[in-house]
Structure formats: C-alpha cells, structure tokens
Image: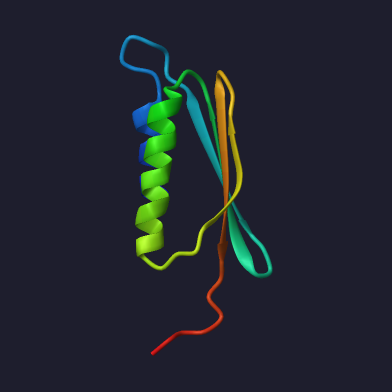
Length: 93
C-alpha cells in the first residue's frame, strides 16, 4: 500500500511547468499498530490527490489491511495523511 500512496502524491503534484514539492513519510511503530504519517508540501491538485489516496486505501483493504485514517488535512500548499495499521494478533486458517 505504501508504494500506491507515494504514487498518488506523485500523480497529484505540480505538472512539468511548475516547481514540484516535497513528500515526507514517517513510520511510527506503536504497541498495537503502525502509524504511517505522510506530509506533502508544494503545489498539488487536491481532487487528483483525494482520488489517488482513496484508490490506494481501497487496494490496501482488498489485501485485508484494516487501515484507519487518523488524519486527512488539505491546505493550499500542504496535504497531510496519517493512517493507522493495526497489527494482526491471530491468523485465520
């Protein structure tokens, strides 16, 4: 899911004629889950970004990932997304 999310930010970033932005990603292991924190700074197309991130989350859910959106914030020159991925505690057979 992480590559799809990164690709979503890339697709929504400024076009060839504009200056690109910067994407930072932080992975924070916690006791019962993994927190994925993305922050994009720079020009971007909000509609494209929302669509790409939604698709990436749907693909992740199809892989039985139970991602929970913790934060979803869109500003003029900054977009932030925080996801929580609970650890699996048992395996179904």
